[in-house]
Image (tube, rainbow, N blue to C red; front, side, top):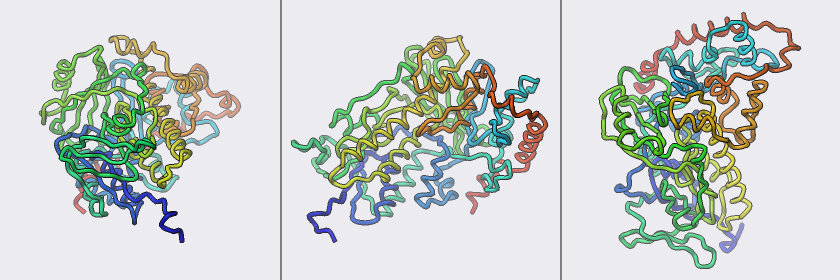
Length: 502
């Protein structure tokens, strides 16, 4: 057994900031570190959280399951609804819409991917959009929901799902979970941060009332301010607004107009886009826009005029700079959530990026030596993941055919990162979907946006000329099967009601 002198274990962790980021981190670390490590969260009731991250992607289910959270309890306590994907309206062009599903389009039945056969059928007169081969869309457009089944022979195995939920209620739910596992909550505002004069590590934080709290490891969940990662350690920020020029948002919930749809909607507007996220008890709405082309008061006025139901609060403004910290982990501080950077929530990745850094903290958990190689690997993965998501979001803007407003003209003409241009080139030539290391979004997601925004390839896959297949009957039967199976599922509201009644 190692002596006390050799014990380099992390004995204390201080999480600066609550909200979704802080309490997700606290809950996960409390579950992973079952002994000999004190975990505390400092948060202030006076400092509001952003709290608009209500839509998620399927990996959130893995996070909840890793904590042992019961889905029915979660749905009940957070007023959650289910999400099968995102409907995009007016993005490729005006009066056009498409669906980005969670899952695949149909199922491949040959060496050549299914979408290549759909493209061939389209050349031969097929008029049905590729959305019709998505099981998720067949279910979503009928307002239905059920969990996918494990039988790979069934079309009901070809989709996934996530949630819409109240981010404030989720943070409260996880706070209870974390406190039950021994996490300590400290109320108050931080007034000062103390660094070690030799190492430059954060040693402690001092509250405005004079209390001081030290730790071995600090997790910065302080939001855009980056109180530790930027305020104390001056990490630096990489600005991406030349690719993603939206820099404002205004949020305003409203009453539900009918039963909640099992999908998010994103509608392209004159200077950005509007989100619609249906929960059990309300609908979340927001307008993400570029302040260069629209002023704040007008954005709030436009959003208020486009709500489905009666507004449930005043407009809440948000300012941001799209980009990332130059490093997510510096010395003994790790940034989680908005303190690590910001990508607009076009593909509902805000909560996922919290989850991703938490997963890396656990996978690369340090001791008090804070091995530089461990920190470097964490940052390499975090930066690559963020840049892959950035490219996917840029894709939506770059592929627009709209020329009716300055924002869209700028985006259609702009140069894009080389990593994205490579993918665009491959798809435009032969309709090939090139995957790269640490792509969060699978080829099926890229396909949905390429085709959904009318980016049809110049040529089909050359291998098709050697296959000699006519798949039109197969495609027709698959589409009919999907539509029929979807029609037999319970409605979304019925599924929620049955689940939370348990």
